[in-house]
Structure formats: C-alpha cells, structure tokens
Length: 323
Ligand SMILES: Nc1ncnc2c1ncn2[C@@H]1O[C@H](COP(=O)(O)OP(=O)(O)OP(=O)(O)O)[C@@H](O)[C@H]1O
Ligand SMILES: N[C@@H](CCO)C(=O)O
Image: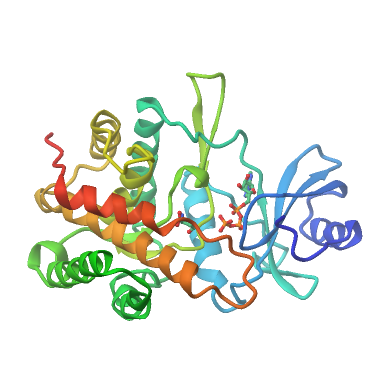
C-alpha cells in the first residue's frame, strides 16, 4: 500500500486552491508504488491530478527531477507536469513532506508489449533526449559507474562463486569501456534511466494503444543516451523468463529511435556493451536492495537473478542493430 503518509482532504485542498486549480472533490490513495505516497486528486473542474509526497528524496534533491519534468512537458513530451504556485514554485510542502502535484496521465501499463508499443517507446525516448538537450541543471546518473564500483564489492560477499565472477568481470569490462574514446564521444544529456514497462502509460483500444506518457523520473540524471535506450531494450524487448532478446521488438524500438534521432557510428557499435551495462546496473541495485534493505524498508525487493540471466544473455549473444 503506497500511502505512507495520510493526507486529509483539507490538506490536499489547501494545496490545490493555492495553485489556482479549483477545489478538491475527491482524494483517493494509490495502492501501487513502493517509494512515495501517491493520491489521485479530482477537482470541481473535473480535472484529475496526482499528488505525490516524497518519502525518501529531500527538498535539496528534488528540483533536478521536477524541473526536468517541467522542461520536457513544456517541449511537448508527455510527462507529468509539476504545477506551480503564483511565485513559480513547483516543489511544495504537504504534511511536512516535500510534495508535487502533476497531471494524471491517462491509460495504464502495457506489461505484455508488442512491436507497436516498442516502436512508440523508441520514438518518444528519442524525442525526450532531443528535448532535454538545453536542460540547464546537472546531476550525474547516481546509479552509474561510480555507484557500481562502490556497490559491487558490498554485495559480492552474498554471492556464489559463479555469479561473483560474472559481476566482477563485467565491472572490469565496463570500467575499461568508460575510458575509451568511443564511449567518451557518445551523445549525452538528461536520461530517465529506469524506463521499464511500469513507468510508461498507454491508452486506447487493444491493439491500437497510444503512448500517453513516461513517468517516475526519480532515477533520472545525465548519462549517455545509449544507456537509456539499452535500459529500455533490456526490459521491453526481452522474454522475461529467460532474459533472451526478442529481436523483432528490439529492432522496432531502435529503428524508431534512430528515425527521430539518428544514431552515431559509435552508438551503433557500443549498443551491445551498453546493454550489458544496463543489466549490470539493475543486477547490482537489486542485489543491494535484496541483501542490504534500507531501514525497515517499504521496498519489496525485485528478484536479482533476473538481471543475472539478462547479463549472461547479453554477454553470450551480443546483438547489433543494422540500419
Ligand atoms: N502522473 C501519473 N499519472 C497517472 N498515474 C500515475 C501518475 N503517477 C503515478 N501514477 C500511478 O501511481 C502508481 C505509483 O506511482 P510510482 O510507480 O511512481 O510509485 P512510487 O512509489 O513513487 O515509485 P516506485 O515506482 O519506485 O514504486 C503508478 O503505477 C501509476 O499507476
Ligand atoms: N526498475 C527497477 C526498480 C525501480 O527502479 C527494477 O526493476 O529493478
């Protein structure tokens, strides 16, 4: 249940009125989600909003994420648009916690995606990368190489010899890769870095669903665009039981990305290596959440072995997309 802080109708109403959005007629806690308190808010203008109270991120950390969402929304990318008060502030306080009010995206998740969904994700991802080029704030990907280097030694004592060899070898490979001129030349900018199936909305009749938005930007940071694409491929375009790539979905996603934002020769060459990086990133974070849960954690850890399988697959069967 993702209502960690109870918000009264009065408290929600005070914020909505202050933002000039009318009055609250209904407030409904959102059951899913594991990090934050989320409510659907309906107003007397028949608009629907999502009120988020941040349970982990602080007032200092949030501006990068919220202003990125606003920046992208202003450039026509379908992402939740944080609503400002009369002084232009988009980070608010509700029940003593940092809070934001964003528009509700329509539709639901596509947990069994087809080529059609993968194409739309690839296309919108490219548009989002291009729209982020002039975003002025900077924060590195906090779950990037430096974090892997710090965290892999913390989790290896919990792993068997086989898995340990794989993760340590991969870390050596990624450290080496990060120093190559090809890697350093990759285009970069703000990336979502966690664009899994449950962070994208689609709406419409079965078989004709249209992408209505990307959300949950709280792992965003500045990294290579290729890493973002690799994270998507590793989730949207694989068989979840085996980790095997489903090539027709992957080709559809990359082709759609490349049509919007033509990929460089280095990007095409390093795609298989970056798909390994994406698998290493989530294997490491899942191991970390699993073996070292944060204080009385509300997190229900995801299965780390899934990303061990994904990494083994990416190493054994590197996939190159040919234009
Ligand atoms: N802007 C939005 N529009 C529509 N639905 C939303 C929006 N934001 C969140 N939701 C709904 O709320 C649910 C929980 O949100 P989210 O996944 O961001 O939870 P969280 O606890 O903040 O993060 P986590 O993904 O780490 O669990 C989503 O699955 C989605 O159904
Ligand atoms: N998408 C992540 C969890 C949230 O960051 C995972 O599947 O491990």
